[in-house]
Image 1: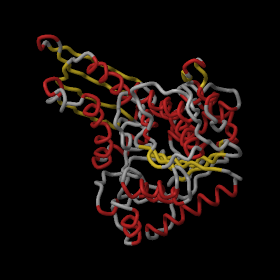
Image 2 (image 1 turned 120 degrees about the vertical axis):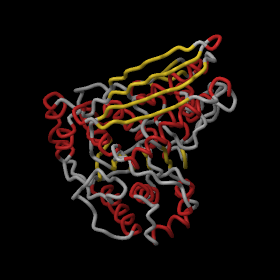
Image 3 (image 1 turned 135 degrees about the vertical axis):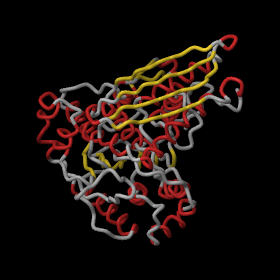
Length: 429
């Protein structure tokens, strides 16, 4: 059954992509796009570029031919980072990509991307230091400086639209508090230089005030507070987050639904990670790890619903560990031991050893989120984009963590935007 199409402004002109952070994830994403649009690589892992969608009687079509997404040739890149390395230098230092196959062919383009001075306070990311930082000022002054950066970048690169996406490190854990209750309280907290307003929130505030979508790829609180949701609706801007769903949690959102679908019990799930990149170094700090731990721990409870099935899932043990191990670099290893319970209470085990590449998994998510949030902006969708939960470990306002249900939610939103019949049983975000 056809429905009325949503009006979507065409993706004309240039789309500026401003990443907060120019480390492993951002440099891998930018290099990948530069390679792909030169025909030197394929966009493996990108739903927006390779995925298809069923349109009922009209069959299946590529997603990028179904909704008006910006083309890769329209993207223009910029960044903030407390380290002054260009995208070229960052890509070399991170060691994710092969220098000769994937960095040198696009060296000129990468060298042109020099990070703007960042907002940086070591109390929020204790294991890092930086010299490419904005002069000290009040939080209000720093937010206004970011707003100016956004306006200046847009003008200098003749961009028609922008998206800001957080690809930087995990901040220390912050509880939601009075400063986050509404926009008035948040702005008063900025003026009072309240420490419960971390740098990530200043970037988000600046973007939203400039009418620019903001995506949070880390487990920081950032836009997951009422003040930011209020601002997003006030300015008519999409927001999405938090924490890119790449390695271990990606597998949890696949395996846990299988356990529940078969009504198997769960006694415990132990997860440990070995990671050697900058993210691993930051997470070696207990307060930053606490932010990540909270993001990772909530997935199983959402999927298994222990309140509804106390006999199966009411008392399982869930442990998560992250170990900083420099020799591993970006090649992360996620090891899971899953103790399940079967017929008549007999114990069984599932063991998973996922040898993955953190930034290789994250880069296509960055691309999809940039293109889909830009689509949402042009379609007039403001506030939290629950239909993008597919991409996050701990999505905002999420009612679903099952990866395949999240994929259906995403597709249903695309169907709704194009006036096509949705799949019954799952409403779009």
